[in-house]
Amino acid sequence: MASIPSDFQDLFEQATFAYVATLTPEGFPHVTPVWIGYDDTENRLLVNTERGRRKEQNARQDQRVGVGMTDPDDPYRALSVIGEVDEITEDGAREHIDELAQRYTGSDYQFEIQTTRVLLKIRPDEVIPHGGG
Image (cartoon, rainbow, N blue to C red; front, side, top):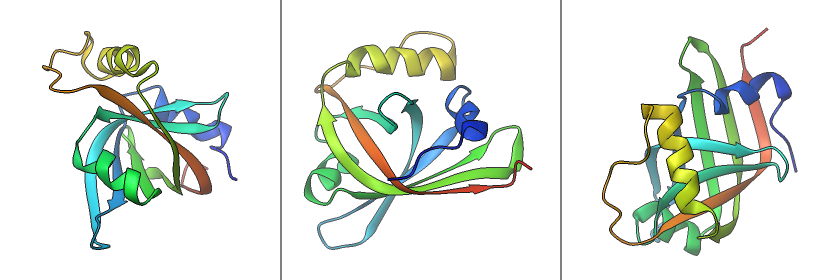
């Protein structure tokens, strides 16, 4: 298992958009932009979504994922992660989406929740930092 370098953890403290790639049942990549979090205690990337969304369905079938993000202040500084979703949980997901919304929009989550919020917890197996000195 790999970990996020300390000099790249700031990407999870600002409004950095990430792109998460999951695999469809047919084996095709499905890439979607997301708000991203990081639990440095568990060393897990956190993707918050609703139960039943395509990325959640894909991750239940095939846990392998890729995540890419670019520093919003420096397009030549980026982070790529290859890993697996090792947990999908509702625990703390509603509170987490409000934390993310505060970071990205400055207020609590404003969109209607159709089903239930879930967290995809991604274990980083390979971490590839780009730039940043």
